[in-house]
Length: 162
Image (cartoon, rainbow, N blue to C red; front, side):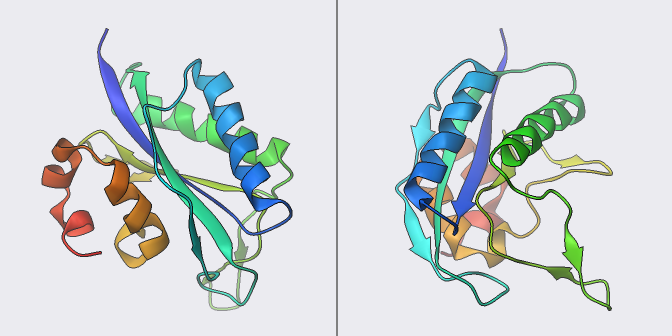
């Protein structure tokens, strides 16, 4: 069976942060029916885009059985991620200011799909690679720790400087 390496970024800055990451990973393991093949170290960083408590962040890589097209499979993964965020108490409605700019805020958990193997996915709901990776050291540092050579080659703009 063909498999794809799916890289996810997890972050939290509310409550028992380490426990939040563990709960999210356990929920992902249950939803995917497996443990991640790779887990980065935890990185603590200041809140990005707003003034709030520091975040704990990490990246994981699951080697998932490929199901349908990359777009269909990524949409399914997104639905899993959103359901876990919701179950953990995160509000899923993004906030915007008067100019339409997204407002960032504290969160109990944030799970982003960073990479779907070496493929790019662009749908109404998903852009992969995640468009803000190169701006976020809290993602680039742990992602670089666990990334395989194929994605480093496919996306040099992400991995060239950290």
